[in-house]
Structure formats: structure tokens, C-alpha cells
Figure 1 (cartoon, one colour):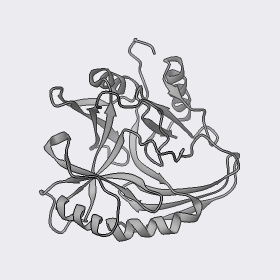
Figure 2 (cartoon, helix red, strand yellow; figure 1 turned 135 degrees about the horizontal axis):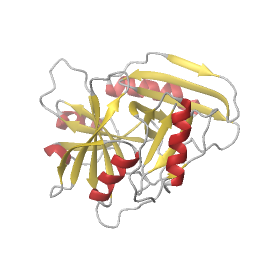
Figure 3 (cartoon, helix red, strand yellow; figure 1 turned 45 degrees about the vertical axis):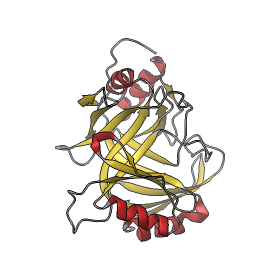
Figure 4 (spheres, one colour; figure 1 turned 30 degrees about the vertical axis):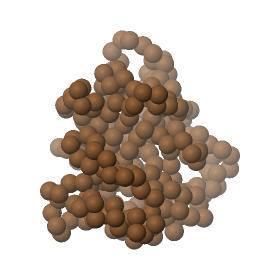
Length: 271
């Protein structure tokens, strides 16, 4: 990987996609409506291209999309669906964490124990839908009583070398350092937010325990970062390749590719 400072075009965070098998799409949407209080909004179907026979998308709000595909071949954009969990945790704040944890347990949803994490908050991981896609609940008793059950929070990314990862995310994704808590083992980063030019998205890099895997994981739950200029998009892809960053080929007529950080955490870049 190049040690020189790399100039990348402006990237903006645009939410998350949850990949669900085609036959399970409706059931998954109903799961999120029932257990997380989300509501299906826009729904789209698109037809055949070089990679897919059909795509289906359902918007659930908060920048969240359920996506399903009928592939022609095994395109690189799809999830691997292995037992290996990635180190990226998409966090959702809830007012009464213990009550939600108990409710999920009583309803047979797989959950971890409550645990302390970044920001002095408590968390638990849970596995949504019959396919078991991992999300993370975060306690925040400052949320208004009339707020939705789950509201957006930050994204936690597990890394083996905290300082090296701060540098990497600054250099290759253009994130800005908001705060460092090296003794506590995490740093807070900011990235521009799509559709909200006066606001930012928040990311937490947190130190992984010794011996944690560094495998590249194609999780069904993944963040999307966007660009708008085709030439800049292609230039950025070339910059990453030349810098030794692991990236995929482009998919969809130069509209999509993904990259991995040094610990195998995946980001999807969309034009």
C-alpha cells in the first residue's frame, strides 16, 4: 500500500443495504415492520442486465433498503452467507435497552448479552429475519419517549491497529477525525452525509481483541458510500488499485464496486 498521501474525491454516506434471498423478501420486510417498527415505503423492481435476471428493492426509511436478486451468475456484489461475522456493526439507538433486550429474548430472537462499548453506552447484537442478519442495539435514555423504537446511531468498525486505521480511513475514504480515545480503544470519525450537506455521518473505529480474524467478509448488511461524477468515480477506483487497496471490479455499467480495509471490512461505493 502506498505510504504517500492520497487525494480522493468527495464521498458521502448514503445508508445501508440488507441483502435478502429473493424468496424471503416479503417475510424480511414484515420482520422489520413487526420487531423494529419500520414501515415499507418505496418499492422497485428492475429487469435484466449482465449480472441479474431481476432485482427487487424496498425502502424502509432511515436510508435502509432491503434488496434481493435473481442472479445470472455469481456476481461479486452478493453476500457470501458464511458463518463468519464481519467487524462492522450497524448501530440503532433505543430508549430502554434492557426492555428491548428482554422482549427480543422472549420472542425467540437471537441476541447477545448486554455489553459496554464505545461512547460509554451499552449494546447488544441481534440477528434479524429468518436469515439471521446481524444488527446492533445501543442504549440511549435521552431519546424522546414518543420517538420510534429504533433511531439511527453510528457505525462501529473493528480494526486491529487503531492508529493505522485512523490514517487509512482518512486517506482512502476521506473521513475526518472527530475524537480519539486511544486508552479506551476507539476513535470517532465523520464522513459527509448524502442529502444533508450541513450534517455528517459518524463512524467509530474500535480496537479488536488479539487474534481477531482479518478475512474479507461480504456481509448481507453493508454501508453504501456514493459519488456522482463518472470520471471521478473511475479515477477513484484507479487510485485505490494503484495504492494496493483491495477492490472489486466495477458492476452495472460503471456504477458500483466495493473495497476492503486492511481488516477485511467491506464498503460499497456507488455512483
